Length: 190
Length: 190
DNA sequence: GTCTATAGGTCGATAGAC
DNA sequence: GTCTATCGACCTATAGAC
Image (tube, rainbow over all chains, first blue to last red; front, side, top):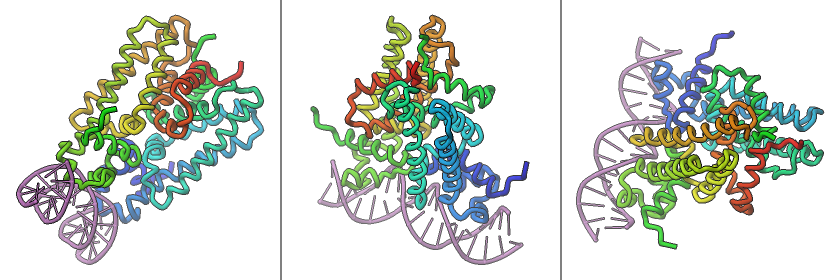
């Protein structure tokens, strides 16, 4: 377990505050106070508030897109790929509960990097969409509206960060299994 | 079709901007500019920025809680109640796409009314939870983790405002049916 | 690496003319 | 009902001492 650098401490603390109030409502003084230093001292480690947001969001967005690419290019069944996407989200949300909030809600405050973020997100969604459409074609999935399937699953996965903190007693593997059961098999008792 | 009052225009315009950037990042000057007046003129119709947020959020939260109470107290099956909850969300999200964003993302910026908002939300979630648990007991629903069911469905419904604008060609009744199919029956082809 | 002090700008909101 | 002008608070960021 390496010691966190001051910069890493700042980013982690900022992400925590961004989750509570959103990027725009958090001031440099808030971040500094949480670290028990003065706002001016932050600038010895980061170049701007915008710089912090970039670190919080972009690394996470890249992790999702890279994970999706690996899953998409594997030779598993489409159902198994969806299972793996669920595991990917559970895993990342468990490790980065605070950053997930900014990824979902603060990306529009990215200045220079908003285009890159949207490219990553679109690439991710396109691959997910192809897996679903392919699954319907092969008969693995029911012939429901693929957009409704995509956004239903994605909505549940993107909100994981909101309720994982309330369920710390459940481990990631178990949560992943429960989610797969509900999202793939549905909830009706047939 | 009655003419919108200036106050209603302000609230609607503000909600639109809140959806794009969030409450904290929207200034009174932004709202005024969108209405082609000066910021000072807004105060002839509303008492504060906080006052606008209250109007945007609270009326919608009450609509959800009231709708849920009616559904909860009906004598339908639990599956049918879940169907009705889905319709309730689709209906409200179609009529109020902008306010939905603030309801989800800006409620923490409510000052005096945050407690009342949380009471409404908790009441809503408690009733939904009871319907799910009751459905499992009666055998209508599979014996999955009720919290996972609750938050999977709720996440999809709460994010409706994000993708309804992209699918304006689909009518509410059809969307509601598609969602019920996916969320209740699942996506696997059995 | 942290501090004090402060520049330069924007914020919500008010006063008062028309 | 909208305007111009402005107040006092707070914002990000920098300069320079220690």
